[in-house]
Image (tube, rainbow, N blue to C red; front, side):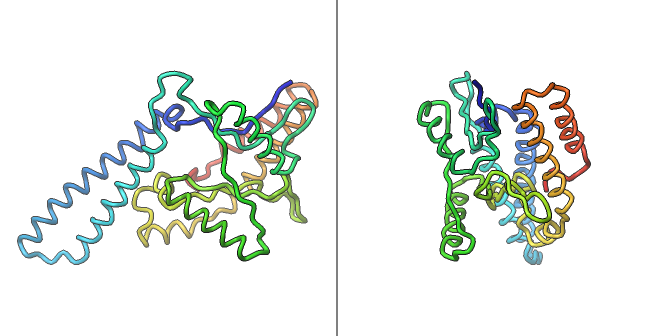
Length: 257
């Protein structure tokens, strides 16, 4: 008997130490140094009576943004001295002996995961969730308020999924999941100062159609690969789908989308 879970290994730093050292930490250090130097120059210019316009407010806001950026990535880091310091957060049962879990509704997944977490709270982390009726304005408002609350408390955000595991419409598959990250977490994706009006305008002009289409094709191929594996088909049949996913992953698309 076996069980295949979709899960996240924590902390971030355990699996992305190189990324932290080569990207996030240097960016934060460089931005902090730049802001400190700019602050000194602005103070000197003000003492000389020069008209700085709104530069003082601009760099004050950037300092706050950079501090938030540094604090954000540090929240996902803690010392890992052994495997006992790792935590695993499961959120989906992909498959198990004889059946695809993806075909089952999400309530089934979450109830099973709750049972797994209860059996080993030292290793496993549970996932908060909310059920939202999109035809009920109060239900939607409560979900939005909850999202604001958790992202204000330093959560990465939430993932929105339909109630059924796999949903199709007349035009094909519906996106199985959409990440809705919080304002502060997005500084790690788009940079410390992405919230400045000019940067937001540029980001809003992005075209996401290609990224969405690739995601759906990858999901369909992954679903087919799991189905073939569960049916004990020859591995080359499974690998056909896996290589298709790898080919799609190699398509030149901005990963920040």
